[in-house]
Length: 390
Image (cartoon, rainbow, N blue to C red; front, top):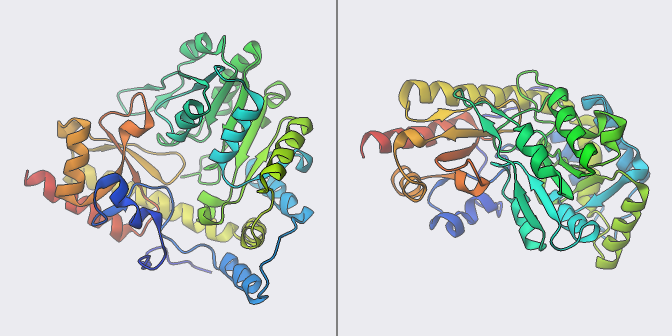
């Protein structure tokens, strides 16, 4: 079956955060919203059909999680990434970030040092700061071609007295697919210094142009012993609104303690739709995903071609994964406040602001390319006109 990712879906009655909440961040909803990380594509039809069949039952009571649920997740990881996690180590989470917050609260103490690599997904810093832990940043290195690598010397120095390292694998926003060698190097530093690893692998299915994801917990037994992995179908299949994530703990004891806390909070169950959507996605969604990845790769090439020919002031990266394009906009010669104002008020486009991603983000924009190409072309054309008429 061929899927139409060029279809423009009217989300005006969809209660979509990216449309309705733009005013909170940009002062207006009258913008093309390319800031928040969900997709403007309909999810795989098999998932829609599974949800409809569940809805047709007409009863939406408390939902029991069948063992097939975690088994489907493990089978998907084995097939796609060559990693077979133990279902006995798996636990439900309403989202990766809430799960991370709970784990920091439960397994670290106030004042403990938590290490991250910026620029990076901004909730990493938020969950550290909001739980009273001490944020430590090891900046990524960026070369003249816009390619990012880890600064291992800096990382090791800062890991010496860190309690936890939060890894973004693959990386949001810079789009790196960390190689097995890079993961081994940073993982062995954590082993040397006894640093627990929280690996956010929520984008791990979104591999572009033949790149291959490596799960941190698959690199070596020693690294696996320190690694807790966070995964979800939300980015892959556009299911974020169903709030269904999975944490694969490094020990059963930690998993049991975490599940007990979920039960005390009475949030341990899936909702009835997330249960069937997740299992259906992993059982029958692969054909849709492969076509999505091809489309996303073409979108990224379109962005680079457009900017090279018509907006040379912008330097988009070449992401190896995710549907997020990290753009160097320093060629426009604006500070961050002026850049945001210009994009919103003159171009009518809401990008993710580089400063949200911490050290190394100033002067950059994050563009969500998970939308029909016509939407991207319209946004970049509006920006082109604004730049040429300023």
